[in-house]
Length: 71
Ligand code: SF4
Ligand code: SF4
Image (cartoon, rainbow, N blue to C red; front, side, top):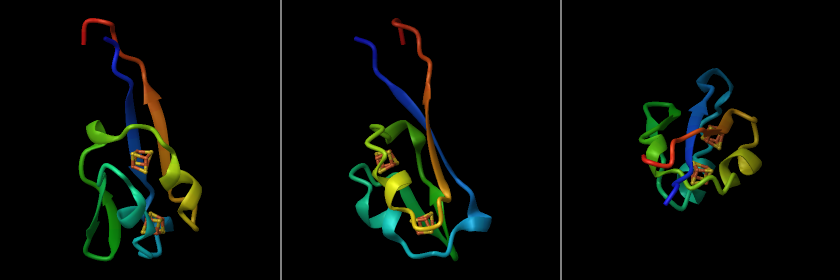
């Protein structure tokens, strides 16, 4: 079955370290890396887009990645 994949990116210069993304992501994709949120593993992302919506600084982008049926 085709599994959708997503690329998750945090623009750290926009991040103000509120940790909302770390707390709300159902797949624990984010971890705090010193003062900024950092992506632990994009492969765990299910594309719910909660992080994009709830980040107060618009620092997160989630982009679908094209995958082959065989993957
Ligand atoms: S929600 Fe946005 S501003 Fe807050 S820690 Fe995450 S990336 Fe940074
Ligand atoms: S889209 Fe959902 S699963 Fe993916 S990183 Fe954001 S909150 Fe986590």
